[in-house]
Image (cartoon, rainbow, N blue to C red; front, side):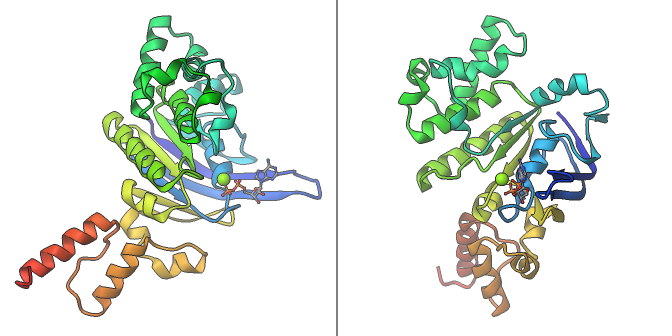
Length: 287
Ligand SMILES: Nc1ncnc2c1ncn2[C@@H]1O[C@H](COP(=O)(O)OP(=O)(O)O)[C@@H](O)[C@H]1O
Ligand SMILES: [Mg+2]
């Protein structure tokens, strides 16, 4: 279990070169242990830079990251410890598979943590189960897997390190709709079972609405919003102004409410909308 506190965090790439670029600007927030956070924002808004600063892969230009009260850069020699504690699954992680077998690939992270053979084995099986990789795939070469299976293997490799915080940078990008939904359910199940902090970077408002309890919105390197998911998606006009949108079903139910239909606010998923509309029709004696 880990609390993350971010204080005035900034990252500038290519300082004093013609390519100087402020990717993250003076961002502060606090993430409680067990939160499931959605991180949204335009391409180039600083999401990937921000999450890489949370696990010490990128050193901030200024500002601090505290994990459970410890400034992660207080002792640079110990930064590895935080990379284990805060597991990061990169965008398109399947390009980082390189071992002979899927099993060895998933075991790569835990093997670097000084665990026993037995424990590594247990962790590999446990992680493979979470992401729905059947055991017969473990002996195959990662190159023989489908795109979706490769993605799952890469995610399992981070889960197998048993991080307190799991960060996934656009984990469903490029998968087909069924694959996206299944993977999202598996991530959600992982979070519910482990009660770990999970940060999901996503372009899909529908995905974020379905699984997260809080949403962090980045805009041009700045923190634009950080609040409960339903509160963020109640700010439709502001989101539109920064080029984002609310889930489509929320738009529909908000519009119905504006026209006097007695639905509650903050409906974020199709399932919830179906339930509320059915209840309303029953109450009105139409069902
Ligand atoms: N390694 C890098 N070197 C220089 N500029 C970078 C690098 N990585 C990202 N940037 C720039 O920083 C900004 C934020 O990028 P990024 O954090 O990748 O945003 P996002 O993940 O929201 O798309 C962008 O303008 C991007 O071009
Ligand atoms: Mg990115």
